[in-house]
Length: 388
Ligand code: FES
Ligand SMILES: [Fe+2]
Image 1 (cartoon, protein in one colour):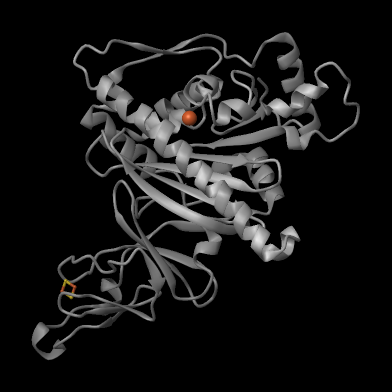
Image 2 (tube, rainbow, N blue to C red; image 1 turned 90 degrees about the horizontal axis):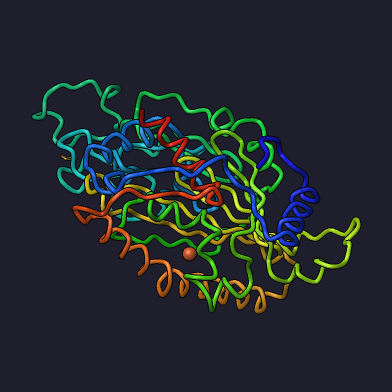
């Protein structure tokens, strides 16, 4: 394991060395944890406040709000949120609650809107959050309009993503949160030029950490996915860079085996590996060989430790950038998306729902992360720092 950014060549060489030796990057020791981390409402409350209410997490890809007045809504662990593209091209996030008596202001998941108008008594707000109309104003009484615009949440757009802190009073600085290495790595991908080909959310009966753990885990591949990912990706072989909060993990595909006995020299073996990125607190960004990405995010439910929302996004080069003909482009990504969904629904979700069920047992006992589960250890190590 290293704590400095390696070149692509160095990462791939390390994975090849591991493959040849039957080894993988390892932490110093095993790590213990208890089942209550996935079931205790007090721990869940601390995570909502001290993790999601303190640090930035990704809520969307830039391309999901292409034009001014485009909006999307989501449920963060602490707030119902409305994210709106502004006329100046920037993006703002608000608590999605009317300032009159708190009705849910925007009910649609996505759309475009000149004015947000409340369904209860028809107060309305401009897209920058200003209170525009108080209906029947003559009888309502005097209020300070300036002070009754929508409540704004800290929000920033960087590296093609919209990031949010789920608390009004915390300043947001995504570059500082990422740190120089990860900020530079993400900048290098030009993710803002990609297209969010498909985005889908799944409300699952499992703690968000059970889900997040599964999507940084290279140890389960051949056992849980023998007929899908296990056929294409090696199990228990990773070169990991630990950047303090975040990590990058390079996993070899099986096609790399042809270079086990032969020295690849200066050849670019990029297409034989998957570069994964764990972005604390709750995202996995996978860079696949032909320069498309999958983003997986996991958010706790606002009150139930046994539920969460996962979102999956497939980010791909546009038809023009890919040089593909439109029909082939569409078919390629449609097929890709269908495979991702099938693996989720048939393999990961049933397993992880079972984990939540089992961990809810009164006597589930203590559990262990192995030395080989390096990225999971980083996730839990950093989470403990935030929560404590
Ligand atoms: S609650 Fe929105 S206008 Fe009354
Ligand atoms: Fe899996």
